[in-house]
Image 1 (cartoon, rainbow, N blue to C red):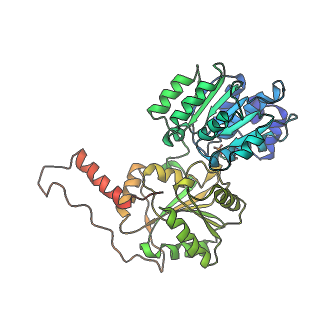
Image 2: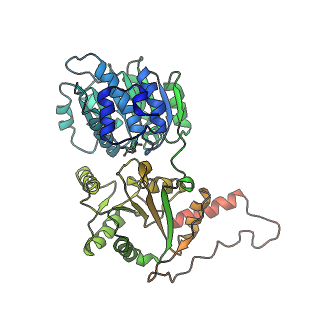
Image 3: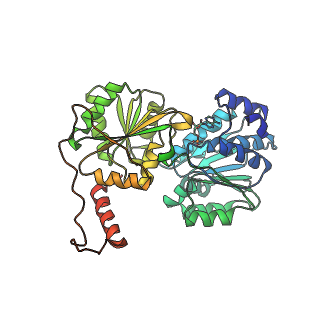
Length: 420
Ligand code: AMP
């Protein structure tokens, strides 16, 4: 079905055509008409599904049809868990809205940077606010904006809003919104807290379930590889692979902030344009590194899991797990940074003697088995650790119970446990 059948206005259809999208993604097919009708939406969808356009396009259409008053009241509020996602949605709104005859004002607000410029920017109001919850409340406390005229509320990546501890802030914000409004809730997963919120918030929602683009076993667009290498030789192998394969860009995941700088530094010494990306860089450095990566000035971004969710970099060809992720879910999110929107990508995991067992657990969770590869000149010399000692002490007939298995799992997790 083409975009033109969804009820979108001409300027929005032209903006979509500018982006060379051929057909709507499944979530766009279902969500756009529902949002245009003004109803609530309960969508289970991940980044990569095209969910941003699924809510941005119809919101732009509804807002551009409404009355214009000054100062502009906030009519659409989009709540997101991270500053990166806020900035990304802001860019999408600009991209999809640039052909509209009325220019809607969008303001992005997030913490970690000075509040004053955001307060100044909100003078005269804004039609759309994209915000992280904490900073939004700070701005409300400073009387910089009010939420009493919000017509549409979007909760994007609702599960992460909870994971990041924003439940109290969300409750405060919801209490400030008018009772009559449209609610759109997007979440990759529905743990009990998000499920309860969705039930409490949404009125007769259109429920949309988009089969996840992952799990990885079913994701043909991502070629997954597991390469065995001794731990101390991983950076050399990385350099070798970059040079051999002439990869233009890659995202490399490591376990700690310290490692991001360390690996990036070593790559730079080898003449590769590499930078680090982690949660404790200043906001300025994070934004600058991400922008430089997106426009190709940085070839390798060495990151912690902070970059594994939500960040969309068009056509990222390669992701490398230099250190393995802690969980099967993190694995999914990391490798989902490649093979985006129909492109093909490669996800490589480095496997060392002490992480072999952990990777097997990840494979098992995904019903996956990857053949282990070795690269000539980098064949490992260390042997994988033997499996954990038989907890039954070899007693016939007594198999490890659930607790034993959990203990064994915890032991493996401890071995690989790292802080972001
Ligand atoms: P999202 O899930 O919103 O983060 O979008 C993921 C990526 O898909 C973004 O790079 C979008 O530009 C792209 N995209 C969104 N809709 C479409 C579409 N209908 N066809 C092709 N690409 C799309």
